[in-house]
Length: 288
Image (cartoon, rainbow, N blue to C red; front, top):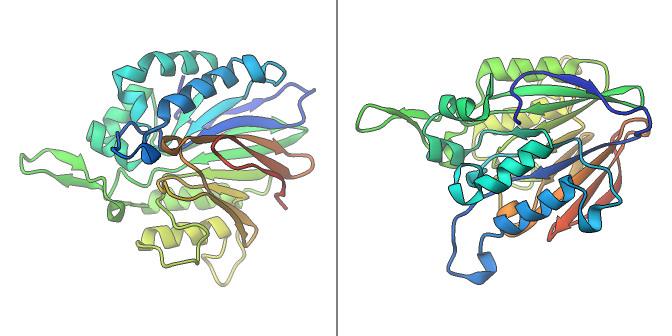
């Protein structure tokens, strides 16, 4: 099941961490070079084992949810429908709108209908160890990306330069990050260069997103920031960097054979990023 509105829930009192799975770019595009072949099926089958606590995951607790961070082509392909149905029956799944969803479905409204979404950007909260953690999913593709085709029908362009970040969504994100309680985790299929600052971003919208995530958009007043930002869209390298108190995570994407289990410890304000298959592992990351 997918969710499209703000929600809040509590974990069992005995649990000291919030565990979830994170995957981006669950694509199906073939490649003539075996080195770059799509490994999506490997990733999905491994995720299914993990959410069902099977085989090597039999001694682990089931994750609380999964975040699919955009370009989830396989979700809309008949070859993978049985796997996705099984995953979605087992664990809540949260989806982020990406440029491939634009290309495959043509508009965000169809995406929302298929996934039973009320909004293309949304948040949910979980309480653990007496502390609240807010999870925020952004939509950077469905607004300015809409253009009329030669037939007069509207369609989303899929290219990087068509990303958008409308004012209403920006202000909504600022309000969430300014809330005083708990940690904030933000997900977006941003095609962002990570870490920010290694080279110029290619749109002003992404530069503004970075400033909002860091809480530095207003030089006259301090603002709340995210603790962690999860990027999507870059396939060729993995990195985790902490800048102005924000971890910017660029994952090894599913098409390249990786996903991660995230363990968030609200009481101690730390996080483990446990890469699966070909993804890297980072532990004991301080979220202060």
